[in-house]
Image 1 (tube, one colour):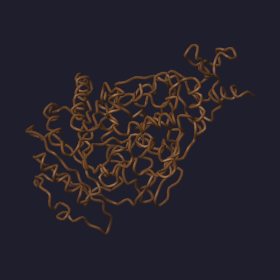
Image 2 (tube, helix red, strand yellow):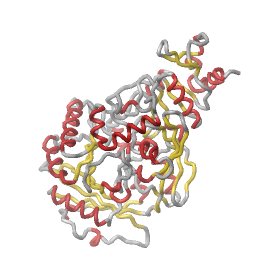
Image 3 (spheres, rainbow, N blue to C red):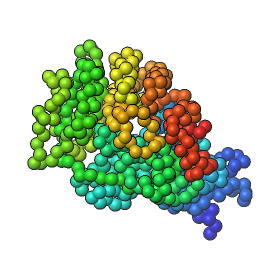
Length: 497
């Protein structure tokens, strides 16, 4: 049996008899189906695959949109992988036929799976989308690390490690995201001030590069590839496997919410706690006061403990200058805390907020400008401007971030500042919110800040991205040239348009 016939038989399993892909026709710019009885030599046959290459309309529509809801970019085909070699073959096939390739992590909770990007970053118009769920296997877990496929969700990884009394030191608050997707952008959560980003917990990766090689990389083995993949937005390789560090998990967390009237006092206490290190979890944000008189600036601080330890509230709260009469605290089983966003996700879905556009803005603000910048944002933000969403304002030492492609301010301390807007269904101000995101971003850049690469900021140009990466831009360009010389990977970012 010929290789092309073998390939067509495998494809039949995945896409049905009505649209069996035989290969790509450069002349017509479209896939050729077996049913069309194409002439030999009129198309490039798809190589034999362990998985399937799907080109049915319904599947393509699923992979044409992301959670942000602003950009639609329909691929020509979707690869449902059966092996790492499928990725190698499709990348080489794409190179030969001048097609683009992007991985879609398929985040969320089944059946609501989507690209959890915001502005078309994981999409590829007219190219081939790789379904990241093909690499959702947990290979091994030891007392100090887990080896997992790039398509494993942080949720499934946490479930497996918590069963063994372990947890990844740093991960995102919302954990129904893929390991490979989060590693490609960084991964912020409440423990960054102690452990760095999620990407900083990864010791080794297996990838398929943009020139079709399966390579392993770490800080000592191909460090240029390692540093170009982690926080590199999928520009040089597809992550198929990662070795992630683990630490003992506590049984319980005690969470304190402290309120402040003064942004200056709030900042002083945030940085005092960050330096002091008494809390493993540290975050915060602003929230409208119930009486409409302004905002509370909040610190959310979590203390990990297991029996027989009992938290000493007086000691943990000593030296702080919050409005103590408004203090709130609770204890939670640690597993429940790790999954704390799940009830919100369900509520957002019930309210119709999950399916609306999401003009999220994620910024990294230098500590020296946090008060002036946040004040200027709040001066323009409507009091109900977050809709059903919320904000995050959390400090971290910039030295905790180890990989060069995570752009950060040139100061010892910076703040993640997120406007996580969840517009109500029918909100007609969403375009204005997007335009406001761009104004806030330009103001941020003028203040020496950086964007966190997720989020919805319109009008980003290659010049903007070059400015964003700063001194690391030449490193990214060199890595792209070396590992993805035909520039087929992850075009949705627009770095090199």
